[in-house]
Amino acid sequence: MVLTLRADAFRAWIQLCASALSGARAEIDALNVFPVPDSDTGTNAYLTFVAGVDAVDALDPDADVPELIKAYTDGLLLGAKGNCGVILSQLVRACFHDLDVHADLTATDVARSFRAASDAAYAAVGRPVEGTILTVAAAAATGAEVAVEGGADGRRTFARAAASAREALARTPMQMERLARAGVVDAGGRALVVVLDATEQAFTGRVPDRVVHQVPVPTPVGDDLVEGGPAYEVMYLLEADDEKLTPLRATLDGLGDSLVVVGGDRLWNVHVHVDDVGAAIEAGLVAGRPYRIAVIHFADQIARQRTVRRSRVVVAATTGAGLTDLCREVGAEVLEFTRTEPLVVDRMREALVRAGADEVVVLPNNSRYVGLFEAAAKEVRQNGTRVAVIPTTAQVQGLAALAVHDPGTAFDEDVVAMSSAAAHTQHGAVTVATEPGMTMAGPCEAGDALGVVAGDFAFVGSDLGQVARDVVDRLLSPGVEMLTLVTGAGADPDLAERLTRHVKDQRVDIDVVVYDGGQEHYPLFVAVE
Image 1 (cartoon, rainbow, N blue to C red):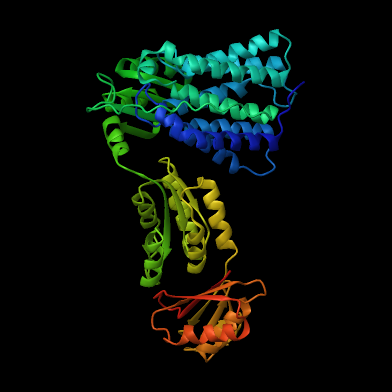
Image 2: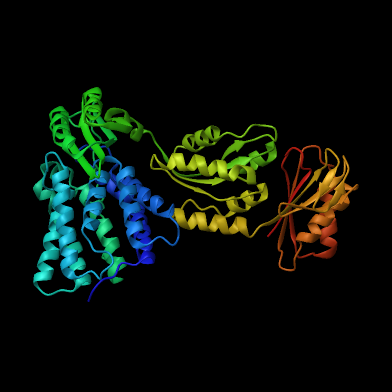
């Protein structure tokens, strides 16, 4: 049986790989003891594959398979994080390099791709060490070749390669003393197995049995994470001619360890652990043009990891003291805005970072804030934090989402439940015109009450109470079970009571909940569920 590469299947596969790494990220981070026990291998692998997905998502929906592969492998190369991410990017790049993607793929093609990937990964590493991701990749290639010799088809060949990788991963503690002492398998090898298992699932429909290798790893003490080892990780992208790479490798290899250089066509991703950061960067300058330079001090990194982080936090944008208190009472971190306050991404990014959580759910609660929070979230995701921005455009939608928030469920399930609650909350508001103008409901004068339904002006009148009743009546469909009224700063103290009586006169079955929101410029927010 042959395999065929299709654009829709390719897009589904890369999403599956990223999702699988997301689920295994914490486990892989906990396994991380080589080359440096900095507990970030799973995060780096995940971010690398997300970069590939983002590159493909930026393409036209009608892009063909060669365009998808080019964008994906370039995205992996440019977005590779850490030692593991760089090697994984090279494995994928080499796997596709010589494939004729226009033809059906045979078992022989599969085996050759595995061997090409393994050879390229070994060549990219300055000093290959067994018991690592390299060993697992080589075992997968051997497994594929054995399957071909036995007459297996393409799918069975891939399944045999993935099985061989899992078997090799289990043997890694026998090949490296550091792994054996810690009682773990190799973290990078585990990341590769996650990718291969996801790919096997895409090819065959079979979900391999999941084996969790998570074992607590002692946190090293001292200025460096490995006694006598380099103190810094240096990474950069490099534009350079091929002939410049040999002297660059020699220079960097003399400066430290964990050297990996991957890429091609004058674009390279360079990774090395050193004590002399300046010398490592200078070597890049001699070879070509280094850019996107990243330097990590391992001691600082482990100090940050020792800081207690929360698992999941909801960040809610609010306006008004009452709404702010309501959100805090249900456990949300709040970012309070005033109507006249300038909107800046920096403040939103700081709020997401200050949350100090591995997972953050954002409730913008205003259409003006959604795009800005998305921009802030994109930056924060680069540091490994999972961020979901639920596009709530009204404060009452945020309250509905918070009502179903469950930190005990999986992140994606929680986000879906909160998104659904917000989307099914119909909302309205009452404000007061500050100057004459034309609205979708007709002309208004300064001082007129304006009724808003689902973000659009629906009513204009001189009696604010009547406009409020009109808004409520518009929202009260037969299936409504609950009405929420949030009164604003300066609102008539009797407004909510009068509206409650008005509703109960028509529908005794509806529960009415009233909050003092304290929001400016809006005497009333309304929501129905």
